[in-house]
Image 1 (tube, rainbow, N blue to C red):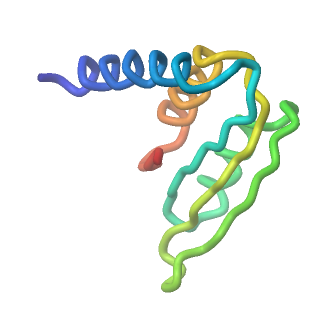
Image 2: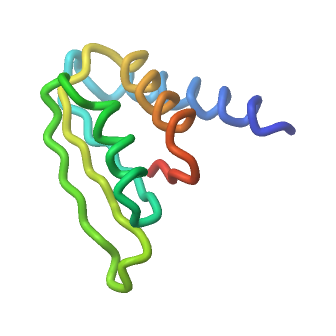
Amino acid sequence: MNDNKKSEEFYTKLKSQLYENTSWPAEYLYKFIVKSNLEAIAKVEAIFNNVGAVIQTKESKNGNYTSISISVKMKNPEQVIEKYKEVGEKVEGVISL
């Protein structure tokens, strides 16, 4: 199975779970891991700029990776998934949790 089909199945499942378990609009917590470089961190932060997000970063023990937690009010599951896809497209090597 190709990666595109896998990711579409993942997003379809996520969307239905979000509708089942959450009343919208709702506060949503994104978690990403990137290599510790300012450019990658800045790209993730820029995607959530101007949407009222609270962003926290924490460097790993060895300083190789940075975790980024973003809490933001989202209108619906489609908006949540849209942001995941945007981060995946714009930030190389990002891991979404």
